[in-house]
Length: 235
Ligand code: GLP
Image (tube, rainbow, N blue to C red; front, side, top):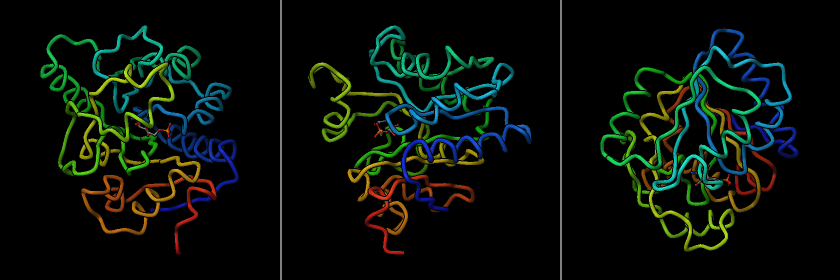
């Protein structure tokens, strides 16, 4: 796992864009995408770039259960706004938050992931070390599932909603096993709120209590973080 400390999101976004360009140049077909505030500047730079995804596929990490694609809080909406409207893919997959049969939706999404192995995966990290919505305690063998969100995650994500009571309590999330199968992983982390999670992920034991520590077992991970997020690292 390689940790690169950057000045800010602009520098971090530029670095990730360079890595993406390299991967696209050598034939990357499928991008794994994430929502949240951490990849925002990266998406901005991608939108302004000359990259063309019209022959490529994207798969997203997660989606809230119950939100429609038109709901401004849904991850589908986020992706349309921040990337897809400007840079359409041939196909973009996200779990369908409104699927009537939730178990069938989980099966469908795992099949999509098997058919489209991810070449380049973007990740953020939760304050408790979650990746996607894989909360502490999730098995590293987990594939896509319906997750009950922890109180701390609901609180952290409430800032995007008018009221905490509007934050969905469940989400579909790719599992850690799905995430680890990506060829290259780039994880963004900014701000002191992420420092503990970054320390656990990089220097702590590989344990299901710290979902992101699973990335220590992956051969090609780049952590792009600012000084505040890396402030608790000792090496
Ligand atoms: C949410 C998402 C994660 C994201 C995390 C961090 O819980 N499901 O995919 O990485 O939040 O978000 P942010 O980048 O806004 O700090």
